Image (cartoon, rainbow, N blue to C red; front, side, top):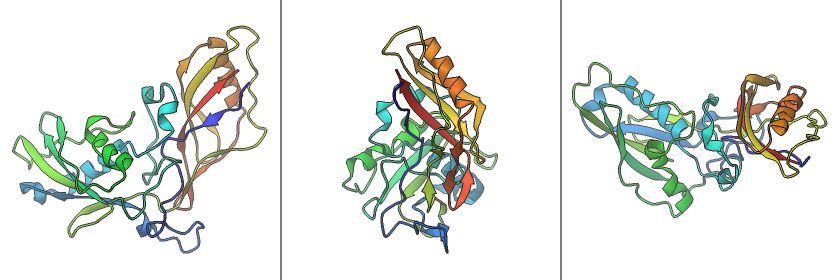
Length: 263
């Protein structure tokens, strides 16, 4: 059996200075986390609660940059995933002081949405090109944008998302200032290779690790598999696995995981 390879959904190193928080947890300041904020462009400004709801959906819809995500077949078939208390970066990318941009969004009463032009460009194409995913290609299992409240009577509203800055009177959500992924406790995961089936069988699967380090099997999904016996062996093996839970802003949290295995 090949070693399992892990790609947490939105885990990774914290941002580089000056956006980074301390590596440790003493005197951690959550306000150092990378900010995404929202302001009104049009007359919707009298609805701060709705603006906050839109922003809350946007940060979890964003396909934050990742170089490795596309290597995991079937990852975008996930139906449900956990939303951490603070949004987090993929484990192979984090922002720095260059990553500042604005993007207008138009939301329509019928539930449609449209992203405007991103600007100014940061110079990091991976970051710049990822922003429109909030509207056009959100992360699987992400929340929908909220419905209009009764006080908004028009057919559309326009707001602006600000990445890396917080203008006056903006609603703001900050990415985790300190984060670490869930880590398998050594020698607790043993998957027996199937005795029958393809010798080159592979499977990609998703599951949630709780804040106590156990697998929640109501969350288990096989995303792609070339061998049913391998899929069963993975599920059996995970029932015995133990993890050090993911950490966000110095406290343990539950986390969705994706892995690929093969024999």
